[in-house]
Image (cartoon, rainbow, N blue to C red; front, top):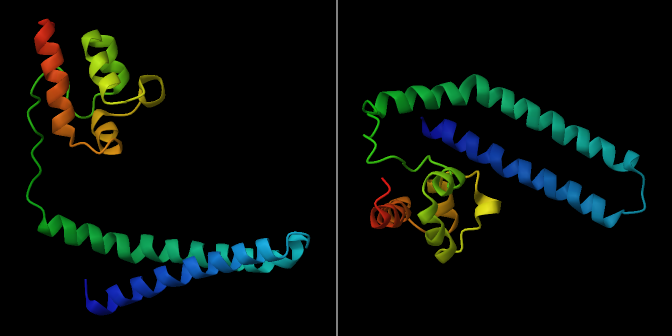
Length: 147
Protein backbone atom coordinates (compact mmCIF):
# COMPACT_ATOMS: atom_id res chain seq x y z
CA UNK A 1 0.00 0.00 0.00
CA UNK A 2 1.25 3.44 -0.82
CA UNK A 3 1.53 6.10 1.89
CA UNK A 4 -1.16 8.11 0.07
CA UNK A 5 -3.67 5.24 0.30
CA UNK A 6 -2.88 4.74 3.97
CA UNK A 7 -3.42 8.44 4.72
CA UNK A 8 -6.79 8.37 2.95
CA UNK A 9 -7.89 5.33 4.98
CA UNK A 10 -6.84 6.96 8.25
CA UNK A 11 -8.69 10.21 7.42
CA UNK A 12 -11.88 8.34 6.47
CA UNK A 13 -11.82 6.34 9.68
CA UNK A 14 -11.43 9.48 11.81
CA UNK A 15 -14.39 11.30 10.21
CA UNK A 16 -16.97 8.58 10.80
CA UNK A 17 -16.66 8.34 14.59
CA UNK A 18 -16.97 12.13 14.78
CA UNK A 19 -20.21 11.98 12.79
CA UNK A 20 -21.58 9.34 15.14
CA UNK A 21 -20.57 11.38 18.20
CA UNK A 22 -22.44 14.36 16.72
CA UNK A 23 -25.56 12.24 16.27
CA UNK A 24 -25.26 10.97 19.86
CA UNK A 25 -24.97 14.55 21.11
CA UNK A 26 -28.12 15.45 19.16
CA UNK A 27 -30.01 12.58 20.78
CA UNK A 28 -28.79 13.53 24.24
CA UNK A 29 -29.21 17.27 23.92
CA UNK A 30 -32.67 17.10 22.35
CA UNK A 31 -34.41 14.13 23.99
CA UNK A 32 -37.83 15.72 23.64
CA UNK A 33 -37.30 16.81 20.04
CA UNK A 34 -38.78 14.76 17.27
CA UNK A 35 -36.77 12.33 15.25
CA UNK A 36 -37.46 14.53 12.24
CA UNK A 37 -34.90 17.07 13.52
CA UNK A 38 -32.21 14.40 13.83
CA UNK A 39 -33.18 12.43 10.70
CA UNK A 40 -31.02 14.44 8.24
CA UNK A 41 -27.85 13.79 10.24
CA UNK A 42 -28.70 10.09 10.52
CA UNK A 43 -29.45 9.77 6.82
CA UNK A 44 -26.20 11.54 5.91
CA UNK A 45 -24.18 9.29 8.22
CA UNK A 46 -25.80 6.18 6.75
CA UNK A 47 -25.18 7.42 3.21
CA UNK A 48 -21.51 8.11 3.97
CA UNK A 49 -20.99 4.77 5.70
CA UNK A 50 -22.55 2.90 2.76
CA UNK A 51 -20.37 4.83 0.32
CA UNK A 52 -17.28 4.16 2.43
CA UNK A 53 -18.01 0.41 2.61
CA UNK A 54 -18.63 0.25 -1.14
CA UNK A 55 -15.27 1.95 -1.77
CA UNK A 56 -13.43 -0.38 0.57
CA UNK A 57 -15.06 -3.47 -0.92
CA UNK A 58 -14.20 -2.34 -4.44
CA UNK A 59 -10.69 -0.96 -3.86
CA UNK A 60 -9.15 -1.53 -0.45
CA UNK A 61 -10.13 -5.13 0.28
CA UNK A 62 -8.86 -6.49 -3.08
CA UNK A 63 -5.62 -4.55 -2.56
CA UNK A 64 -5.21 -6.03 0.92
CA UNK A 65 -5.96 -9.54 -0.38
CA UNK A 66 -3.34 -9.21 -3.13
CA UNK A 67 -0.78 -7.79 -0.71
CA UNK A 68 -1.36 -10.52 1.86
CA UNK A 69 -1.39 -13.28 -0.75
CA UNK A 70 1.96 -12.11 -2.09
CA UNK A 71 3.49 -11.93 1.39
CA UNK A 72 2.16 -15.20 2.79
CA UNK A 73 3.87 -18.52 2.60
CA UNK A 74 1.58 -21.46 1.94
CA UNK A 75 -0.42 -22.22 5.04
CA UNK A 76 -0.09 -25.79 6.25
CA UNK A 77 -2.76 -27.00 8.61
CA UNK A 78 -1.27 -28.18 11.88
CA UNK A 79 -1.47 -31.87 12.55
CA UNK A 80 -4.02 -32.45 15.31
CA UNK A 81 -2.30 -33.50 18.53
CA UNK A 82 -5.16 -35.49 19.90
CA UNK A 83 -8.89 -35.99 19.82
CA UNK A 84 -9.50 -32.24 20.12
CA UNK A 85 -7.90 -28.92 19.21
CA UNK A 86 -8.41 -25.18 19.73
CA UNK A 87 -11.53 -25.18 17.53
CA UNK A 88 -13.30 -27.74 19.70
CA UNK A 89 -16.19 -26.24 21.65
CA UNK A 90 -16.43 -26.29 25.42
CA UNK A 91 -19.68 -28.27 25.23
CA UNK A 92 -18.06 -30.97 23.10
CA UNK A 93 -15.15 -31.25 25.54
CA UNK A 94 -17.42 -31.71 28.52
CA UNK A 95 -19.69 -34.14 26.65
CA UNK A 96 -16.87 -36.32 25.25
CA UNK A 97 -14.49 -35.95 28.19
CA UNK A 98 -16.51 -35.39 31.39
CA UNK A 99 -13.34 -35.28 33.50
CA UNK A 100 -12.44 -31.94 31.87
CA UNK A 101 -15.31 -30.21 33.67
CA UNK A 102 -13.22 -29.47 36.81
CA UNK A 103 -10.64 -27.71 34.61
CA UNK A 104 -13.32 -25.32 33.33
CA UNK A 105 -14.67 -24.83 36.85
CA UNK A 106 -11.19 -24.11 38.26
CA UNK A 107 -10.60 -21.50 35.52
CA UNK A 108 -14.02 -19.86 36.09
CA UNK A 109 -15.18 -20.81 32.60
CA UNK A 110 -18.98 -20.85 32.67
CA UNK A 111 -19.89 -23.96 30.66
CA UNK A 112 -23.60 -23.13 30.19
CA UNK A 113 -22.76 -19.59 29.08
CA UNK A 114 -19.58 -20.26 27.06
CA UNK A 115 -20.31 -23.81 25.90
CA UNK A 116 -20.75 -22.95 22.23
CA UNK A 117 -17.44 -21.08 22.03
CA UNK A 118 -14.23 -22.64 20.77
CA UNK A 119 -11.45 -23.34 23.24
CA UNK A 120 -9.12 -20.72 21.76
CA UNK A 121 -11.79 -18.03 22.06
CA UNK A 122 -12.60 -19.00 25.65
CA UNK A 123 -8.92 -19.03 26.55
CA UNK A 124 -8.48 -15.55 25.06
CA UNK A 125 -11.50 -14.20 26.97
CA UNK A 126 -10.03 -15.55 30.21
CA UNK A 127 -6.57 -14.11 29.57
CA UNK A 128 -4.92 -17.43 28.78
CA UNK A 129 -2.95 -18.76 25.89
CA UNK A 130 -4.94 -21.44 24.04
CA UNK A 131 -2.01 -23.88 24.36
CA UNK A 132 -2.14 -23.47 28.13
CA UNK A 133 -5.83 -24.38 28.24
CA UNK A 134 -5.32 -27.29 25.84
CA UNK A 135 -2.48 -28.56 28.03
CA UNK A 136 -4.63 -28.51 31.16
CA UNK A 137 -7.43 -30.32 29.35
CA UNK A 138 -4.99 -32.94 28.01
CA UNK A 139 -3.70 -33.51 31.54
CA UNK A 140 -7.24 -34.04 32.81
CA UNK A 141 -7.95 -36.52 30.02
CA UNK A 142 -4.60 -38.28 30.49
CA UNK A 143 -5.15 -38.59 34.23
CA UNK A 144 -8.34 -40.51 33.70
CA UNK A 145 -7.00 -42.59 30.80
CA UNK A 146 -10.03 -41.82 28.65
CA UNK A 147 -8.26 -40.78 25.42
